[in-house]
Length: 170
Image 1 (tube, rainbow, N blue to C red):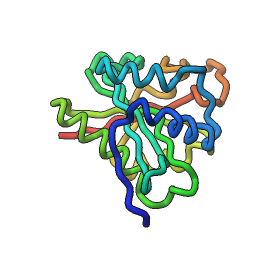
Image 2: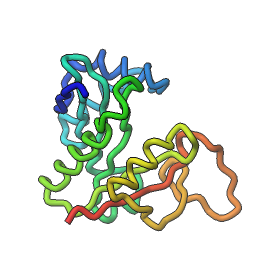
Image 3: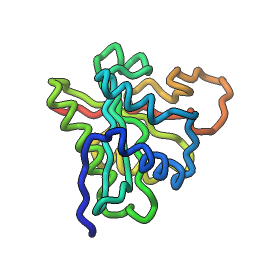
Image 4: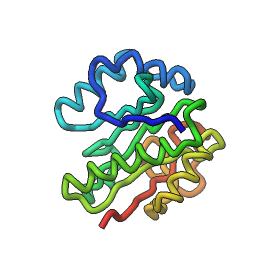
């Protein structure tokens, strides 16, 4: 296993963040990471980056006031956009990125963290990771773009179809 370093991202990491997203096949709107770093400066989110040696290989974001209303109402920050490039997987790095977010949540005096996970096979590793880390469904059912899906409602099976999970950090 290669030693890694997890730290808060800076503007000098923009190219690395973009490379990770591209390698993962993730398409963001132009200026996405610049906006994320601006929100980090405004203390709305934290962007953590993981590097092996000096090469960025993963990132995650912690949103202090998520759009998902049940988390927002309960003052539960949401871990989002966890990505680790394929060659750096199976080394525990994704778990350490989640743990780094949980540590920030605890430092902020909050007692729970939330996370959303996609429902199709691309998210299989993340689904398993979150369960192993102690996350359980929040009980609100499936969401589409952070809104609850009602019975008999048809939705695409895409990245916006998620199950929200929660972990008690007390």
